[in-house]
Amino acid sequence: MNATAAEARTEAAIWERTIKPEEADLAPDSARFFLRLKQSTTDEALLAELSAKARRGELTAAESRELDRYLEMGWFLETVRSKARCSLRYLS
Image 1 (cartoon, rainbow, N blue to C red):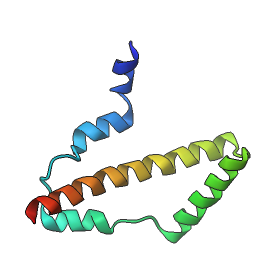
Image 2: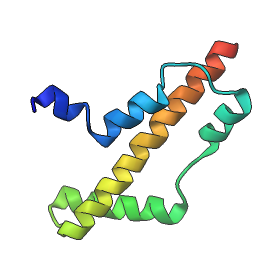
Image 3: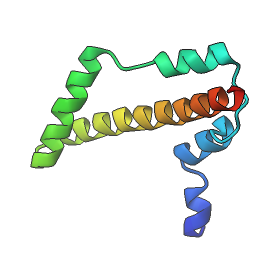
Image 4: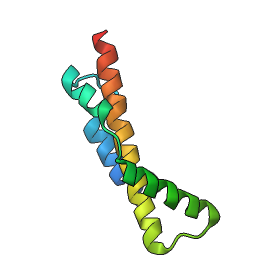
């Protein structure tokens, strides 16, 4: 499998094709809901702690996987928020 085919099968690529952030097709209430979503303060603190440990090169393998999950969730939220902003801009 070439690099392009492998890249097309990542979870991020699959979500991108599913969500289609460039399409302005969310209902206004749905778009506003997605824009209000945010991590809990507990998760924000843990993400900051894991990120600091990563910068210092002190993450365990388990912490590295946990940080990856937080980063993937952040990417997912930003992708959905992008679609929400696009949808609300289209209505203006």
